[in-house]
Amino acid sequence: MLSGENGPRSRSVYNGKCSLSDTVSDTHVFRMHITQTSHQDAIDCIRDAVKSILGDEVLESLFIHLETRNGLTRDEVPHRPDVFFASLKEAFGQMSGETIGRFIIKLFYARLGLAFDSRSNGILLDYVENARRKIGL
Amino acid sequence: MRELSEEIEISKLLGSDVKLEILALFRKNPDLVDKIDGVSRRVGRDTCEVQAEVKDLIDLGVLHTRTIEASKVIYYDPKNVANIQKQISYDLRKGTSE
Image (cartoon, rainbow over all chains, first blue to last red; front, side):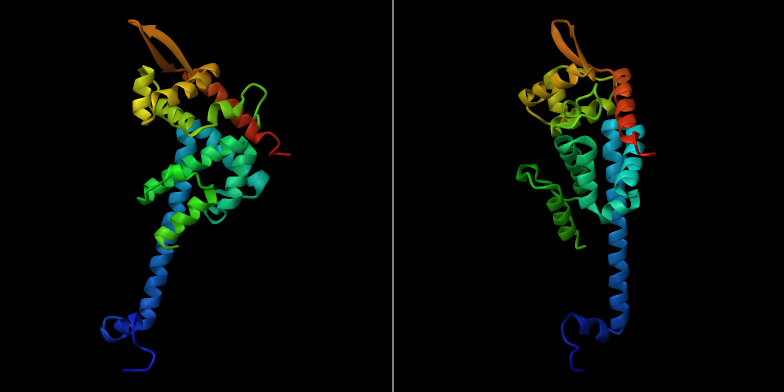
């Protein structure tokens, strides 16, 4: 056995189907795919949640508000959930911003097939972190 | 408490999970006419919980009540909701072009 090639890494080297670099590359591509899919899911959830309670016009106005007031484009939202949730509270008020954020997160959890525990009353960013951990981001 | 506009107290409209669920239900089914316990069942909540939230939505003109064969039913007012949405939209955009 070559030194340093035991454990999971050695399987990809010895099975003759792919090299170590292929495995790393595949993992990277898979991870990128998950990341892109969940980021798109996150944007879709925001769109669907806000549309379902307030309609298209408010949704568009919210995105304009986020970009103009908070420098947050819709594509950046999944990368900066902290700014997004703070902006929701700034736009709609503390209580309503929190409930809209929770409504979006519930939809996101459902789309990812994750169980949402509303009883835990966690803060919004904790739910996002929890989802990231569960889907391995 | 934040008010998006002078006319709409936003927390009265969006200030609880139950309110959002009721709003989403009626937006998806604008012709729905149902009793309070029917609405509660549709959103999967207790009637008492829904009753309190419905009161605020009635005050805002999002929902109305009427009596049909001795039963009090709730229905949606899309025209009023459109006006409220316009106002929220206006308030969100206000100042963004400055």
